[in-house]
Amino acid sequence: MFRFAPYVCKTLWRHRLRSLLTISGSAVAIFVMGFIHSVQQGLDRMVQGEDAQRRLIVFQENRFCPTSSRLPEDYARRIAQVPGVTDVLPIQVWTNNCRASLDVVVVHGVPATRLPEHRKLRLEQGQWDNFTQRSDAAVVGRQFAQRRRVRLGDQLTFGSMSVHVAGIFASDSAAEEDLIYCHLLFLQLAAGQSAAGLVTQLEVKVDEQTDPDTAAKQIDEQLRTGLVPTATRRKGAFQTATISDLVDLIAYSYWLSLACVGLVLSLVATTTVMSVQDRVQEHAVLQTLGVRPGRLMRLILAESTLLCLAGGAAGVGLAWLVLQWGQFSVGAEGVAITLRPSAELATAGLLVSLGLGLMAGFLPAYQASRTPLVAALRQS
Amino acid sequence: MPLIEIRNLTKRFRKGDEVITPVLELDLDIEPGEFVALMGKSGTGKSTLLNLVAGIDRPDTGSIMVAGTDLTRLSRGQLADWRAAHLGYVFQTHNLVPVLTAYENVELPLLLLPMTSRERRNRVDFALQVVGLSDRAQHFPRQLSGGQEQRVGIARAIVAHPTVVVADEPTGNLDEETSRQIQTLLQELNRQLGMTMIMVTHDAEVASIASRQLHMEHGRVATPPPTLTATV
Picture 1 (cartoon, rainbow over the protein chains, first blue to last red):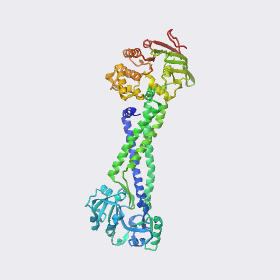
Picture 2 (tube, each protein chain N blue to C red):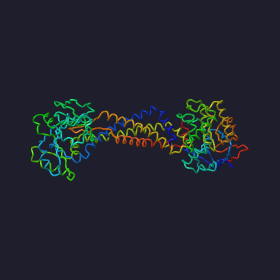
Picture 3 (spheres, each protein chain N blue to C red):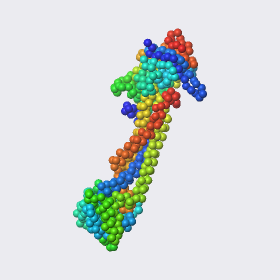
Picture 4 (cartoon, chains in turn purple, yellow):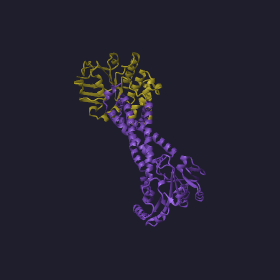
């Protein structure tokens, strides 16, 4: 088969404009597909991790936007009394936009000294001490810093609030890298004097023996007599519910990615059919020389697959570059989905391209291999 | 013993409501090293017979034995293998692959046979030398004249040292001078390399280079000269 590789490559090069247009069309479609899948992957990463399943979020009942949830910080003490609860972290959340946005800014105010024990963050720049010792200090996620070109020592201003960047951190969780952490009290005061002692949500850790859903019910039961009713869910479920509109949109975009697949299929199939129709006589000559019908099929399949793979590789490469460069995140209600390139995404793109190339070429290849030779040789 | 033995060969095909029989109950023997010219008017079955012997068409009845192999019993794949190993085909319109150089076109049939790249190179060089185109090896078909293209086609037909070479109107698209050069070349290949050849032509002058001329009429050999072994 490889002996015919020069023939296959030269055939594609013969109609280079047609090949190039097909490759570029496939590349755009695979790029869009990759982009859509990166959103899906970001969502999966956010709601399927161990933290998302084992940790609970206590939020004000029937509220979604962080600005509207106001829980007494003192709830932390009462929640800690629930059996199975090992730790409670009060969090004040600030976001620049509660609606869906492609450039959402989310600031979490937490007790600074407790942050390292609750989040697996690696400071790439700066010192923890600089963060804990300065009340207006903040540590910024790497992805957010890259997107907004934030540097260590910068003064970041959001609305009426201004923080000093004391560190830039990396995390295994992509969603974490899109957050800013500052001191809880600082963020409470930034929201006004009346916000002192209030938090947006409480994050609860339960031990391994406790079922998180049972603990959630017990927490809501425990706080039923409190000033503010609560709704407690697993962190993943909370995030999914918070951005449910966005989740629906992401599910809908799955169909768009299928349309992209169909587009590549029809594009490459059309090119292959045209190429085969142009070369009916040439294929008959090859068979007269002794090329078996099966080998002819493989040659045509190799052409369609190469076209598709070239387009797929270009699309995957483009998606990788754009996702890496753009450091995008899409979010709503203070919950952000981060878009990241991944080896899994690239592999999926290339495998889809490979499959589409084979599918697109199959019918024309089969027809070419079954064409009666004498009739084909007479075609001009 | 004949190299090619054709017995009771009939080929029919349907054209609309009409059934055409270009070859009808034909018997023919061709000896090794013979150069046979098939002549006749259009539609007398000479090209059909050539294609049947070449294994690119199938008869309705009869048998075609070439060097002991009955082509009518081979599958499509087996026929392709047989053609690769035993057949050289010279087309009227050259039919070179436009994206390949003269060298690569001649090399094509060898890619289907088990041999080293060195052996392939030697054979291609020899074939191009035989047809006098060693200096045009890296030229593409569009850079060659009609006569040169046909020479490359002939080199491609002989490069695998086939059992039989068939040629369908090999000079039909050439001017008089080039046609004579191709005739001479075919004659030399037959005489010097001992290749068995079957050539279809409607030109008596071209046919005269063959050692035997067969006139076909209504699907049969019409007027066999006394030396012929073919019977109707």
